[in-house]
Image 1 (cartoon, rainbow, N blue to C red):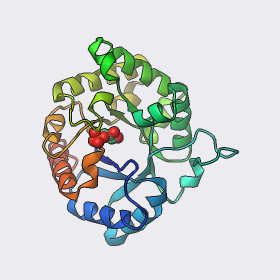
Image 2 (tube, rainbow, N blue to C red; image 1 turned 180 degrees about the horizontal axis):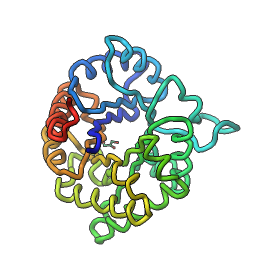
Image 3 (cartoon, rainbow, N blue to C red; image 1 turned 180 degrees about the vertical axis):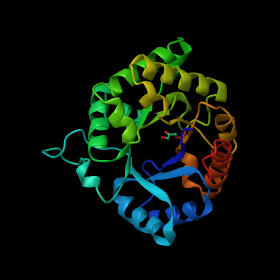
Length: 263
Ligand code: 13P
């Protein structure tokens, strides 16, 4: 049975002085057997969040929100995969906000996925179409292209062993309060599994958790977790609110129990 994952993407929110407290509060309010929990704060908050989560034996992983595609060099302001050792065990790659703000291409994202896997970081690879692409009936084609490009050159067995996770985040649903329907999201997740299959990923692809992201709240999570092909959520705005995270992870826990993951 595929893993159930709830990942918090704090984006450009929190500071080193308040992030630890928020992480501790969320961790203590989301204890739910069988659900893999991840908090991805800004780079400067990784150490305080790691320290806060190390207390009380919180079983919550720490993730970065980006990683550079080179190991070292003249890249002012960037952070490489080896630098994250001891700070994070997960990393988000190819988020649509980075594709938009930093011009990240599928080819670049694929190099980041490779660097993350080499360094033992679990990548959360983000894909998703723009509104105009969906309205033009091209959503599936766009996501198919993103998956192919963003996994180009990645070894399926290495990706599976390294815990690759894919997040389907339709761009029009991010931060807008307008989420996809569970049915539409599940159809895209199935299409992504079809792409992986078409790439010859076989068992390595079939076991990968695929999450939904885009305006997920405690009120909408049920719609996604009710879909057997959706394995969790990548949560933005609501992930900064302990009440919301408590509700989201509690609902994910129901799915984890139904999948026999909670024992
Ligand atoms: P929101 O949950 O704020 O829509 O953000 C989703 C997202 O981009 C998570 O990576």
